[in-house]
Length: 325
Ligand code: PEP
Ligand code: MG
Image (cartoon, rainbow, N blue to C red; front, side, top):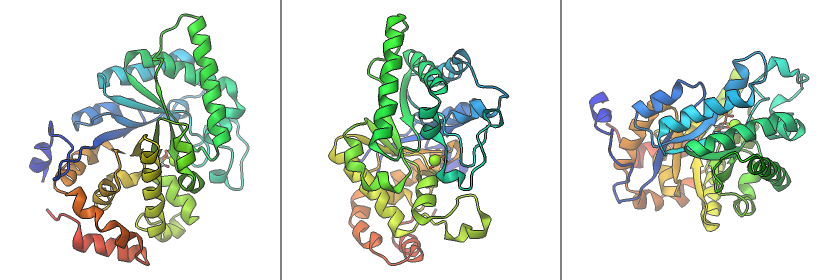
């Protein structure tokens, strides 16, 4: 198998019937970028910047962040790099920020909710990202967006930061793309409206599954209920991709599902443009894509999404779609 996967290096990520997608890697710690490049990733679809804040005992400065983003952008040598703004809260704690304990941290004070409330921290990060954008193909992504108002506030602050940089004659990419994570079910349902105000979506299935099924993603007691094959989850994903495309934007995915061998053919058929996963899954994903006909699976989507249970979905895929190697 390893030999077969090594042969995938340098090949295009293109389906049997000629449909091209982008296979990218997720990174957190800085050294992850080397694994993405080693595995022939076509970019980074998710840079989890919270690690810069978590592996430190104080807030990272603008210059420290700028360096961390610039290094990755340069290593990617023109390939896309999606930098997600700080996504703390939930399971990601930063002790020195002294955020009060909550009954429901996953439903609480986290990500853009925290950033919009702590402008100084937010603008420092946005300045660092914008400055780094002069050194590569950087895109900005906001996590945990739940309403259009939040998105507009984020974009407003970003524009203010851009104005400041212009005044200071500091270089950045003027046409930097702005996107959001689609990881709250309300956003998936309302995605047509969101798509009018961003350049791209990235579907965060880790949280989307947790929120749509009301299952804490870290709770072992109920892990049997956390299921990526749930037909309702797949419907939310399909809806998001279709609505994005209706408004002419590209749609990616950076949750674990993007690297799920059984779901990759389904996502391809739904029209997903970019798949971002852990580096070690990239070559296998390329192998699967190259051996799947998008058209064939497209014809099965309506049937699959109308199956009654997650088990039925998984069985159907096993029997009719999965390539067994
Ligand atoms: C997600 O929710 O799917 C995601 C990619 O973000 P994180 O796992 O960092 O919450
Ligand atoms: Mg998430």
